[in-house]
Image (cartoon, rainbow, N blue to C red; front, side, top):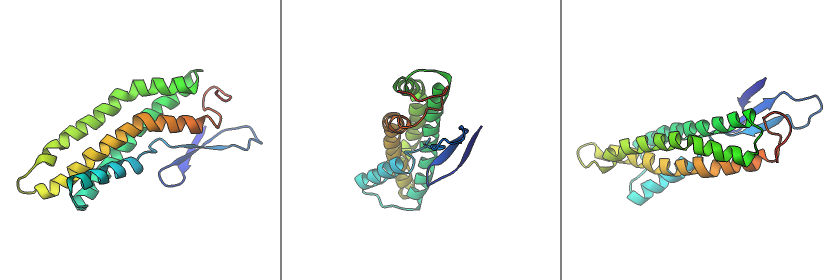
Length: 174
């Protein structure tokens, strides 16, 4: 039985059943770990490059962006966890296979959202001053959070998972 309860900001703590006396009861699971950092960096950078101020519509863009970033992280890490528990392969193979399997859904989510906001980014008519910051934040943030989801998150997960026991079929992985 697994219990999930809120931990620090942006993270969940997973407590797994273990034998009495085990000191390492809880392990960190960060399925949307890039969520606060990647969209913020990408969105702010995109606003700065385009010379747009932070506004209410840009803030709404950040909210939408955090949802997509977390969703992409959950999609990838769910596949990693599923492969870990169902196979006895080494962690680096599991991470590679999970990224290859979930690359298309993660890229398509980001691409569809980004392409949907391109007309808003290029708008010059009435109301464009409201639309441009929102679209700029979403497109810039999606670029960075997609790259971090596919490349950085698996590497960081591999580093932290390598220190503790795997959730798989018992024992630790090498």
